Structures are given as structure tokens and as C-alpha cells.
Length: 200
Picture 1: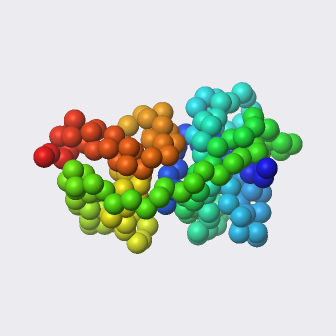
Picture 2: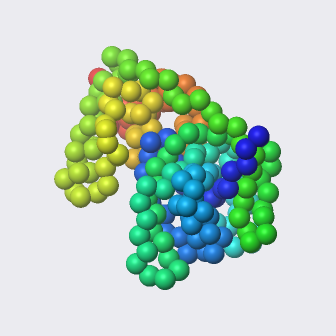
């Protein structure tokens, strides 16, 4: 079973999502250099408990997402700015191990991609609201979701909403780990209607 280097963060990376990272710790500078040389991804896992940097006991969520480096900038020595794209989700198949130097690794098994599935008619208000949110982000100069927009795909719509919504990390993690994209979108739709972001 393949072993994957892990980057524990207090964030949840969704497939297809964009993750900007500022790297300065030696273990992650080495990891970024290796990934840039080989083209291989690293794993982003949500840090449920423990420090994000330095030593100490940590608890990692069992499902994460492979991160592919798309762009890199080095404006100062010892600091890298990465732009990563979320790829395939994975499940930890064994307890993570902290290697010499502090880098976490684990054996993982990849999860299936969301099957292409159009949003049902009842979700069209939520789809339209996402399209408006994306246009608003563009108008503000904020980073929009990566092209192409896939508003006809339930999993993609749900994932982009999950990135935007001000919900706890634990809730984002549970939504990301759901293997049914229609259920993920339905839960997002219920939240938006409860908050009166969308109506009937």
C-alpha cells in the first residue's frame, strides 16, 4: 500500500479546490522541493488536535485530499508560496508516522472520485446562488474557483459551497468525507435554506 507524505493543517481541502500555502519549515520546504522535482502530490489532512507547527501529539482526521502543486513563488530565501489544487481523496490505512525531521507519512488508500451527477431540480436555487457568489468573488478580485466551472455537477457545486460557508472545520471534514455527492449537496442546500441564503 503506498505511503504518502502528509501536511497536517487546520483546514479541509476539497477535490478541485485551491489551497494557497506559505512554506517556511525545513520539513515542508524539503517536501515541496521533492514534489516539484517529481510531480508527485502530498496529502493534506485536517489537524483535529495538536499543534500545527513544532513537536507535540496530534490527532489527524482519517480522510484527506491529495494536493498537487500548480504554482510556486519564492520572494524571500527560505520561504515558498505555493498554489495547490485538490485531487483525489484518500483514507488513512494505518496510523501516521512522524519521520526523522518531523515530516508525517502514512499508508493510504485512495477513494473514488465523485461520479458525475447533475443536481436535481430542487437544488437549482443553490446552483444559481453559487454562480452569483462566484461572480461576486471575481468582481472583488478574490480568487474564484478554478476553471472550468462545473455547475452541472452536484459534487463540484457542493464542494465549492463547502469552501465558502462559515461552518466549523469538523462539519467541513464530514462533508468532504461523504462519498455520496447528492447527499453532500442536499445537506448544503438545507443549510443555505435554513440561513435564508436561498429560498424556494
